[in-house]
Amino acid sequence: MNTTSSPASQTPFEHEVAERLVEALQLEVTASEIEPEAPLFGEGLGLDSIDALEISLLVGRDYGVTLRSDNPDNKQIFSSLRALCQYLQANRSSAG
Image (tube, rainbow, N blue to C red; front, side):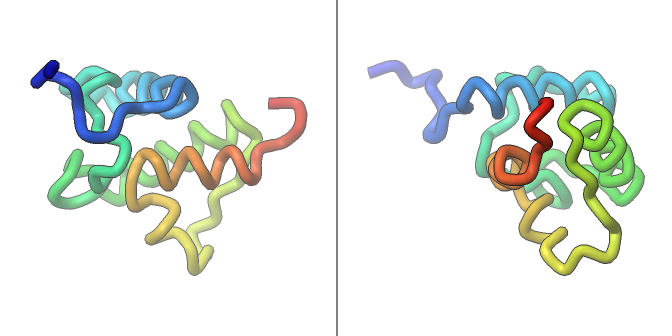
């Protein structure tokens, strides 16, 4: 058994978004190191509110999805890479 594989592997779309997050936020991890279900904020990647703003700008520009600061679902949307990607896939514009 391969002990280096993660318990939950990234989908191709999750990897794409992870790569963009690493680049945009200048994270000190590789896209592949981001666990899809690990928290993005606090204990997980340790992102903060400034990072949330950067993510909002990135997804608006790259995926045509507007993330509003007053959205009551933000805690869930930003809970993990997987949750963010699921939200993007459900809400992205047809052009994306």
